[in-house]
Length: 199
Image (cartoon, rainbow, N blue to C red):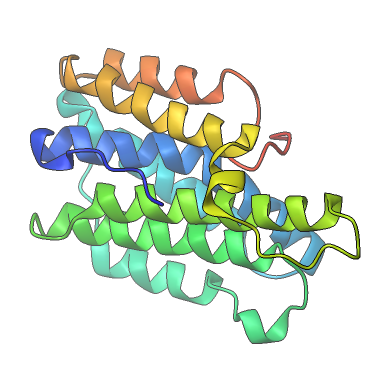
């Protein structure tokens, strides 16, 4: 089960904008994890995403020292062995998504949008599995099916958001106004991709 969007039909700019918009829904999960676990600096992720949005503004494009940014990001990646609660996994997904995006901005052969799309979907998929398991009768030890996960409102929302974002970008000019539009689109509900309130 995976979102199958034809990213090859998007330009590099459109793919980076798609990824940045998805990251707006992913990094709040890192913020909550960092506050709860007293680990990492959320400001590093927030600043890096701001840099990416600035890079997307062709009229005011900033230069990014990718190696320096990746070096700043690496210490923010939590080790799942050190934390015994779910929040570590969406936090890892958020950091790996920014890492993949920075690499894709350097190297056009890196499938950044596809990787970020999958990481966002994975966060939701895993969270939905936990929700379903928690809601089930304790005697019910049958396996959770892909269909159950796909039909959960959070998973449906993830699919809808990614589709809507893809088609909005496909038909939009590559400018600052498009960035403002897609950012507003993904932040409209004020929730992360896990349905958690963005502070």
